[in-house]
Amino acid sequence: MIAIQPATYGESIEVHTSIVEWRNKTFTQRHVVKRGDTVVCEGTEVRAFCIKDPDQSGRIKVIPVPAFIREACS
Image (tube, rainbow, N blue to C red):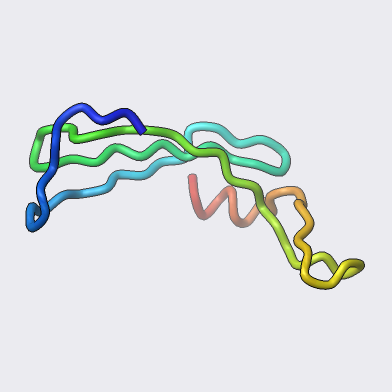
C-alpha cells in the first residue's frame, strides 16, 4: 500500500476494490481507500484461487479460477 494522506481513528473511510488482472490461477486486486473524495492510500495484491489439497492433509492446492467466479467478479 502507498500511503498518501493520514487517517485517524473514528474517521469514516471507504475501501474501493476492483480486479485489474486475471491470470489462469491468480488475480490482482486494486484497493483505493478514500475519505470522502480524498484518496488516503492505494495498493494492489495478488491472490491465488485455492482448494484443500485432497492428496495432502492440511495443505492447499492452487487451481484455475472457475469461469463463474470470473463472471461474477467482472
